[in-house]
Length: 63
Image 1 (cartoon, rainbow, N blue to C red):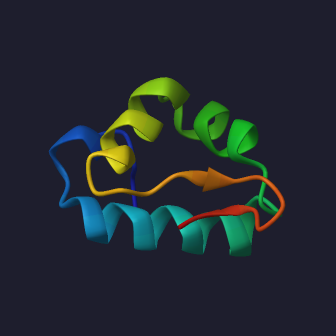
Image 2 (image 1 turned 180 degrees about the vertical axis):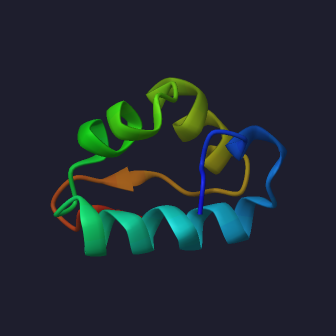
């Protein structure tokens, strides 16, 4: 799934996809994920925050 259009995605679906990608492809490294998809980390976190999600570094996922 291409995350380049994350801003228009459903927030719950976005969180699910991002967590899946973090787990399966990026070993929980959010910086690597945003670099790979060439997206703005702050914008991604802001979008997910609208539904109450935040990135938990130790858990390596959004909750």
